[in-house]
Length: 344
Image 1 (cartoon, rainbow, N blue to C red):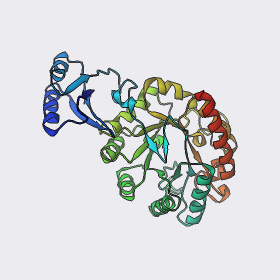
Image 2: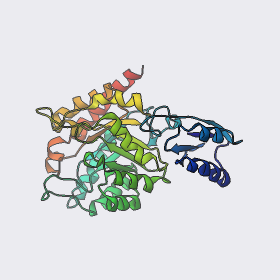
Image 3: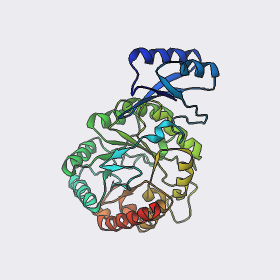
Image 4: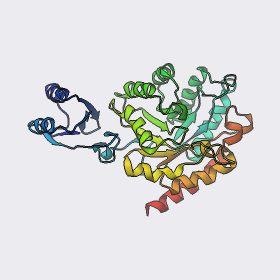
């Protein structure tokens, strides 16, 4: 990690450090902050000659070497000094709440508009809404491009940013063009490295866009989870949140095996915020409040909760695992109280 003396290097200086690192099989990736830009050395940074040549440059303050499987996401990285703010919430300073429907019904947009307003009143900072849905059964509803217009209209009506899942590069383009604030990568695509690279490339120069990266389904190891995020960060945008959402094999009675307890393990290794999805962990509305509080007790920086104004009228997973806005209000109140206790 190259830390320059000035806030940003000029093009000639960037060309010089790029040429030096290239000689040693590495390349430089600028990480643009609001005040200062740092320059990550991507590749094997152990060569002393390369480090000496870089440190000898008059405009370089110092070189921080980070030897881990994920140099950018490592908690010792200079990126740890950054802060992600979305929906008026700065992660780490306030509990972030993402809430809304699992799936937007394009035939009944008013249900989503009403839900969006209700979750805002309950205290949510970001609206979630599924436009495209990965389904095990090929004959189940897969989502509809029309739902993207409904999602963005809900954002305009409420003034809140929105989160939706993208499953391929076509979805990614549609979401970026529409102005989606938070791109969600689901558990089935958590190790789809070509998609992760495409997302990183698409948002590399879009600091207003963030990514909610879910943990892979099959008990994804912690290092594997963080390394997946490295694919996104490598293109210059560090606005990444890690999202435990339950793994397999399932725990009898739950949809998955709740894994909010991974939060402290993640925080030991990376600076990234942890936003837990209790809805997919347990898969039943009655269990979501307790799972939400458990996640906060383990140190989660936020929650991503499925909520629907009339769950029985929903599609996708909403009828079985969405909580009502009334329940959401109570969950948010209790979660904030617990979050405050943990901070004392």
